[in-house]
Length: 227
Ligand SMILES: *Cc1c(COP(=O)(O)O)cnc(C)c1O
Image 1 (cartoon, rainbow, N blue to C red):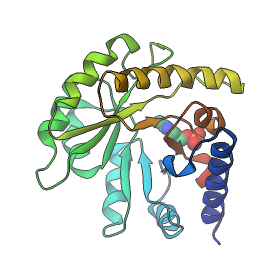
Image 2: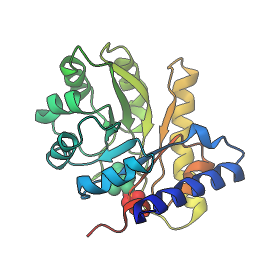
Image 3: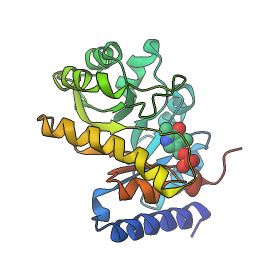
């Protein structure tokens, strides 16, 4: 087994263990391997170990990697900051964009999603801590944005994503994730057909799964520390 394959297996086991602890079905938690800064060869190793979903933060870095892996069965998630002049490439080359936080960006993705592809999967990034330097829509404006995007035909609104402020303590981590979970439950109660709660990274998987995460984004624990 390669190093990446054994780390991937360990992460899958960790997810299963946390799911069991919190009485959840591990099959409803999607693992996205965050491959930013990693060469295409690492991604190939992960694909050969059965990994299908990959997350990238930087378009300039992601496009050559996606182009270098044609015909391989990978799904690409964009999880970085969106520049409005780059939406055409995002709409054409990615399967998911998890970091939408403005209606204008969503409208561009909707207009630019190529006709031969299925609707683009979208999550709304929420700034749960209202940190001014951080991307994401504030909880108050979320319902209006979600309703507007749900009506866009070339987008499929799947759910919410957040990167809460870093914390070491499990209960603090869990509390931040529960805020996102509450917003998600409210949108679903309002009739939106959401199925994705994207939260949890290498350092806070247990708290995210405790709070109901259905998609975790893991880089370091799979590929090692970034340089
Ligand atoms: C880098 C990154 C991750 C992965 O973080 P790790 O701590 O390496 O697991 C997850 N989500 C986003 C948005 C990231 O930028």
